[in-house]
Length: 293
Image (cartoon, rainbow, N blue to C red):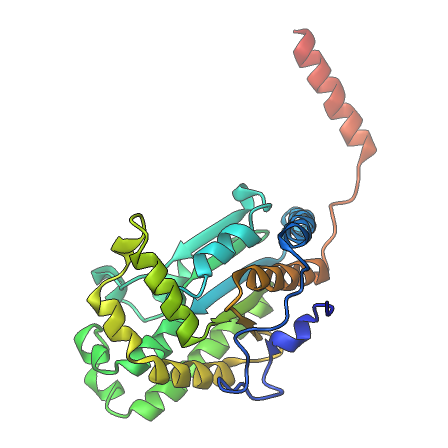
């Protein structure tokens, strides 16, 4: 069994990302289910300890982005990878179709409102990258489902280039304010996705999740792959890298994500506040007095 090297999955602009050259399946980093569970438990505990320190330090935060095609494993990864993190210091925001209020503002507005506080891990389940993914695959939606002035959508190549710049600057801004941006693209093969969709349709409790519209969207697979490749290459930077996770094996996927998250949390220059034994003793005396009363 090979050692898990997270750098293999990192794209920070130094090398190009290619959909065709990036595997959706790699050799497992676990021997069996028990080993995988044990590794994940250890990583969860380390992650919680590191996050506890970040929370006490009160100067850094984490914004974690999950992007993927349907059924790639976003929900299950969030559920399993972050299972040990204190829920009071953990936020998940999911984004669907913009509301009327959202459309009355700029396209990043609704994402600003869900950013985490310092000391918190904030998860975005689908992200502002939809604005250069789904919108790029379906540019007609720019006129139908947004309130952008016509003059700004007449030149689409320029629009996408400007949005990549907007997003990169947004992430650089967050980094300069103490918020690390961690971006995961869960890379799943079309055939594997198809198997998972079929499994959903055979499951009474999950059948409702799929419709003809989902299958119609799946026909755009090549266009989405191209859009992901272009978006990742345009926005991968050393300060806000992309991690492209091979996702045909969900157990391996979760182990890789948990390792990356643990390494990032443990790399933050954070410490617990300095001990004050005198103050602690004073507070202990106050508690004892309260209990006697």
